[in-house]
Length: 396
Ligand code: SAH
Image (cartoon, rainbow, N blue to C red; front, side):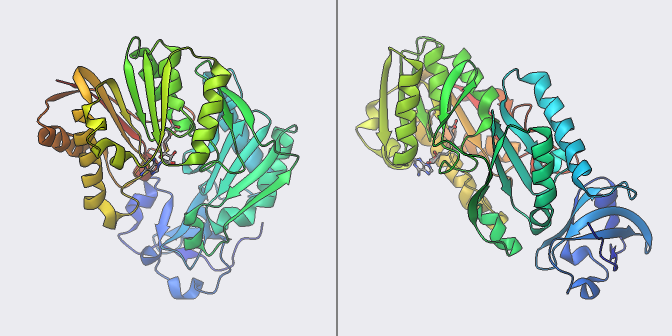
């Protein structure tokens, strides 16, 4: 693909973060921004530091705060089908070291050196999500590279993520190859799950919680378990498989609970289960529910800190959830709280939880902090890519 004739020059004193490998360039860090304003969004551009040293190749969008994202530091590298094939094969190799079944996140954006792209693999179905104009422009190369590396796979683009609006992109869902069944059966931690990639949330499934679900399974024998914000049952089913006495599921989406019911029958459990379709805070605050008690309480809400301006309100949300969850936890029981907010760090989450325990009058011991599974690598230069935090407490 053609590279823009004009190069992007980084302002003096702004190079260090970029030289250290952070792949984003903000519009206010660009020396010659006015000369680049009319470049078509998504174009390839050479990035220069120290006035005129060519440093990297990026894609560029003049309408965005994150104006450029670096694709490669090898200036002789052509951004072509082979570039994508190499990245996909390297990513696939990593996943195959850990998983013997083809169900995993295949491409995790900047961490797999393909910024703005997520690909989840459900066997022979690839559910992709593009969030930037640069990756959108490169998508024909991506599609042909996916066809070469995984020739049997059907491909759907779940490009209905809000972040696309910042890049001036339409929100859409489109099938670009093959047929996508209404439900796909996958296996995770030895359990069967049905996935609706066309209508499910995000790409259809949250692969990032696989290790945390396994951990919950490992401590759930003979336990009464609460799975709040359950989606189609990832955590609760792991608990049932490992001998939980009962699981209570709560989610506000009827659609996901229909799949949960199917997942429960697919795995043929005999224990007691209860499915509540309602808002979690409403249930946890209701006087009837407050009489209940659980050995294991799981709280896996959607992101409360969606942007920096939501920081304090969002953290109050985690605090309140912990306070309500702690009241429902048996003495000596376990409470797991997770956050998928990029903008809240692990210490932020622990501090919010601590405040929640204090306000509920309970004492807690932090026994485990964990992030994502192996198929969600982190770019060590980009702390924003470390989004998922899961903290587990023993509650006294
Ligand atoms: N625990 C799940 C993933 C949770 S995603 C897993 O392991 O796969 C967050 C879920 O919260 C979604 O299913 C969404 O429908 C649900 N949700 C969002 N807001 C909610 C609310 N206020 N009350 C109940 N559920 C909510």
